[in-house]
Image 1: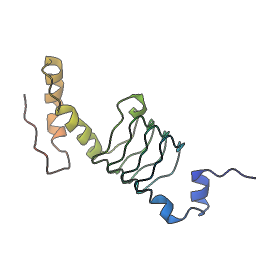
Image 2: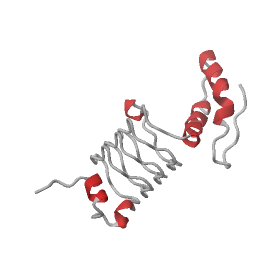
Image 3: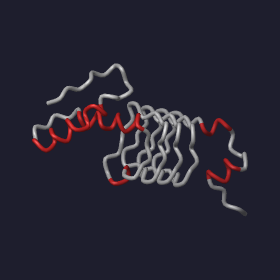
Length: 145
């Protein structure tokens, strides 16, 4: 009997479209490596500890998603919505493909921390213009320190 993977089932048309609606799903520790999750609704899902390395999450709705300890190495998040999500701060979030919207959002959070170290202030001020291109209009623009 052939073992079905997420990608084989999706390519064969066996997955119902509702399977791409994983809103509020508990996928903690899920093996989603290389998964094709383009445009999936993962809003509010628990993806903590999930292995999503090299997964295609382009266009996915990841708002309010718990990505703590998730492995996103090599994943494609181009066009994904990460508002109010938990971005993992470990090596599993390195080498992730993002667009300028997500990069500016991450830069905005970097620039928003309170640190008086001169090296940080120099780095912060160097990326501040880019960070202030953050897409959300309900947050204040940051000023040079």
